[in-house]
Image 1 (tube, rainbow, N blue to C red):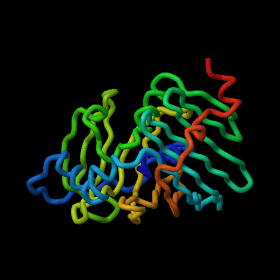
Image 2 (cartoon, helix red, strand yellow):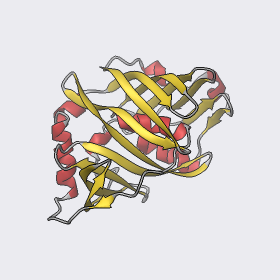
Image 3 (cartoon, rainbow, N blue to C red):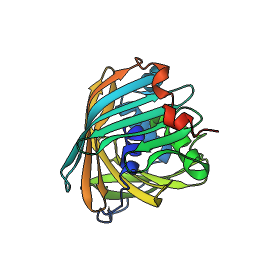
Length: 253
């Protein structure tokens, strides 16, 4: 759940895949992809626990090592319909916002101002806002395949190919030892062009009955950024949080 929304933050800073290529390990009999995903779901609390919540609010920090930037992070998600919002306030730069209200996808940045997403970018954001994305719903991911057992972030992982409903492909990496998702490899269309992002997630902690990753590491133009989640609340989000701000409403036709 955290990674689903935090990926939006990574895209705000145009991340590039600069991690060393994954090292392929000796092949064993590979488990079925759905079996691997189900093991992850069980490890974080089980399907019933995932489906029990209808909204979440997480708070934390974002740091960018090279420029020495840091900021306060708020992420929100909700279901029925799926919605998402992320706000990052960077010292010396200002507030960055990106949201999806169930129909419209938008962003506001100090350098570019308000923008509304269209076409492929809008459809990708709609799918990324899936509140129950940990389940990898067959309607969203009709084709799954275990590709290999490989080394990812220094640990043995199963690499799983996911073909999305829009026919695009992305990859998940699941820790062989724990069953928990260790990261992902995604390609998205952005205002800066096609961007491929590798995210490493970890530091799983329990909030209520659900285990969540509380860290996301990625590389931004050769500079590492890290998102750290410190608190999570479930089912307390007011629907008005997802309403587009006035500058965005002025652009929506």
